[in-house]
Amino acid sequence: MLKKGRKFIKEEKKDIKEIYRRFWKRDFSGNTGQAIKNSAYSFSTTLVQKIGAIIFTIIIARLLMPELFGLYSLALTTIGLFAIISDLGISSTLIRFFSKELAKNKPNTLGYYNHLLKIKFLLTFFASLILILSSYWIASIYYDKPIFYALLAGGLYLFITSFLSFFESIYQSFNNFKKSLMRESIFQVLRLIIIPLIIIFSLKFSENVLLLNILLGLSFCYLIALIFLFIKRPILSGKNLNKEQKKQVNKFILPLTAIALSGIFFVSIDKIMLGHFVSAEFIGYYAAAFSLIGAVMGFLSFSGALFPIFSRLGGKKLKKGLRKSVKMVLLASFIIILITLIFSPLIIKIIYGTQYSLSTNLLRLLAILIISEPLAAIYSNYYVAIGKTGKMVKLLISAALLNIILNYVFIITLLPRGNLAAVFGAVIATLISRYLFLFGLIVFRKK
Image (cartoon, rainbow, N blue to C red; front, side, top):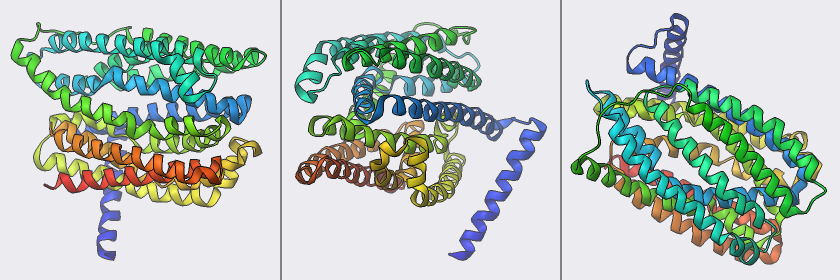
């Protein structure tokens, strides 16, 4: 075991030296060089995104306080649920087929773009419409919380953000991750300036109006970022797809649709259920802790940069790339978890203030996700890249169903002991289901 550990450290030192050499000489040739370049821009984008998100979360959490922050988080989570419906794997499909086409002498990128854009528009339109029509029932009957206006504004928010991810996927297919970095920087600066001002001037209004103004402000920030993506877009060429090509694309989308639909319940079910059973301030405590863990996981999730490369590789090279990615994530994850477990009280106090002290132990427990989530993202992209999404669909559906059952059982069982106990129940249910999903991904990959 010790010998393997030394060998691993030796290999990592060699890889770090190679990365440094390539950066120093600006040598990004070959798949290795392209992966390093993509990862550098992807990491920079993630750095801007997560640092911006942390600063933004700190500001609005302190301005809104636990109850209003909980309502804001619940509204965004609900809108995010419908946002998943608006994509259903379209962005991943675009990256995969574009990457395959760009490896050819005469790529037909325009045909795939037109076909996927039509599907994307229909999905986004119906998702936004369903959200708007069901917003009153969700806010007033299911949650019984004042987020009705926010969900109405969510129809616009969803439409803009959905197309933002679609057009950004085009740049990623061309291995242009620099555009994503610039877009993210513009959005973060706008959000950090506009939203706090909106909150300050809207605190005198009702909770419904305050949350409405925040969602409209966020929609405006995303709209500016979307407009930026239209500047100097990649030139697409080719012709409309024939029936066989459309059938191939649609066949690839189907399992991704199942993944996305399962992902709705896998990712969002904890907050969705808590929104029905506990008061808003406890959702705020949970959201505060999860936001920090999400930011940390983002720094480790560079798998998006590897997806276009994975799509072009095969055999031993693909497996080698997967192994290296997993090793890098594991090494960093253990260090970060240890720091979080020791310093979580200080972290919560400095970042959010004493009002969020109940988030401390939630942060410690959620820190366990720092290992599972980045690894699951890498393995999921691996499955998609090799076109074998069937196994992943079965795993995700099973994990999603288990997550729903466990969340309901744990929340109901622990709710008599108080709202905070119910929140801990949701966290435990989430940890169990997500680790079982990761375990399944690892085991089924070898079969």
